[in-house]
Image (cartoon, rainbow over all chains, first blue to last red; front, top):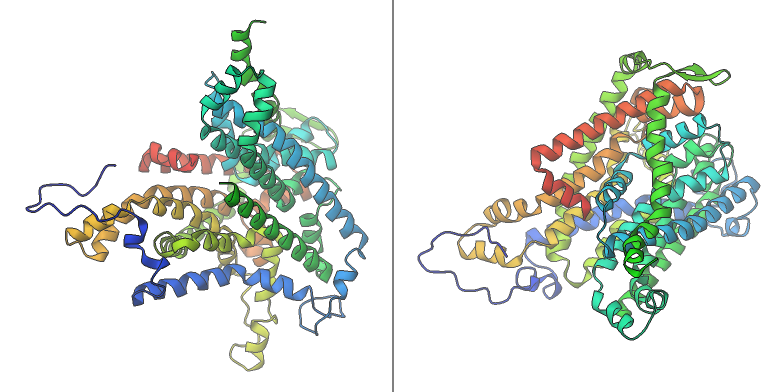
Length: 290
Length: 288
């Protein structure tokens, strides 16, 4: 620990009684605290409310009994849009494309990203630095540049745009996120465990299957879910490489000008609810395991 | 194949599929884009590489307004995110108690709704006769022709909204790591609260500030969704131009030249930023 507070002092300060956060931040025990802290508490909640405001509006207007083309004034409560969820055929197709692409992205990027994460977290080899650099570039590049450059390649090679090119793009931008997540998990592992497995006669595959993989699984799961989330939400890169295929965000974009039907709100609400349940479930499972 | 050779080849075998995917679909396309920007031709007759640098000159001359506006909007929204996000990150890190992860989860809640849908929700909220302005106009609080959309404020507000969580997270991580013993030591040495913050907490949280600025400025200044949905034609950013040129006009060389210009500006910006603040800090913070 390097301290920035140094220099001679006439009487050395008494050693801190406890170095635990609770000593400075009594938030856990004292609920209210001095006025400045209370002000900061109110402020934080205000920001959280601001962040969640559009979500509340989206969910609410999925229950709006709207009659006209525009779903923008409140006309009474109804749940009928949940029953007519699949009434708009091309919206349903777009949603199905989004789900299939997100699942495939989760599996493919999850698989090959996990392998990259293992390689980087477990081994020292020439080329590791270059791989890290490329992944850093892929994570921090502007989306529009990634979408535009991939389209440039497809145009140059005369590759027809559609489902496959969307999938290629989604795996491309999510694989680095999976690799980084898995690498972080691999680095926390004790190599002695794998050595012990090998000493006990397990082969390379058995060691991986019964020792390494179960231990890195939380990282693999987190990476895979992240890939799914990135894929289902992506608009910019997809819009460049979709051709005439639509996904849920692309359909919404196209429909903005003519007004969004309440089914979009319902689908958004269902994705939101599914994501929240999954995230809480994963977090709870993780807590129980540790 | 002996065991040692196999052990040496294992990392490469693991790396192969993912590495190839990134090489073919991320690195090669960047080269393809630069190449396309230097070609001449059209869709019907195809393109040939003529090293036509003039495309860059013309592109920048024609669209410098949008480029400058993008950097301006991106910069202003990044500063706003820092100003709004720092106190939030500070409060969660120091006063969040046992519910820290709950507050972080609440901050991330918007990410469970599609980016486009979130932005449209704002458009809906701020629209001329929408749920905010409609009632205000009815009671005569604001003039009939007053509008919030199609203004710089709306676009910058949208960018700030959409990228704020990306700013708060690295700030939180940095503030959470600040050794509480140091804060106490400062108090023991009779530093006031302000002095403790300015001379102990703030310097120690700078890596988080670097990382937050880095990961919000790049997407904010290259965004076009907010400008399309919340802004008017006079608010269009360079992203709008690139998107239009690629997907609607299909003037690929100009579009490619503008994308490469955007990337070059951002890369040079990141590099200078990293140099000015110490490369180690930024890369380390970014790697986290």
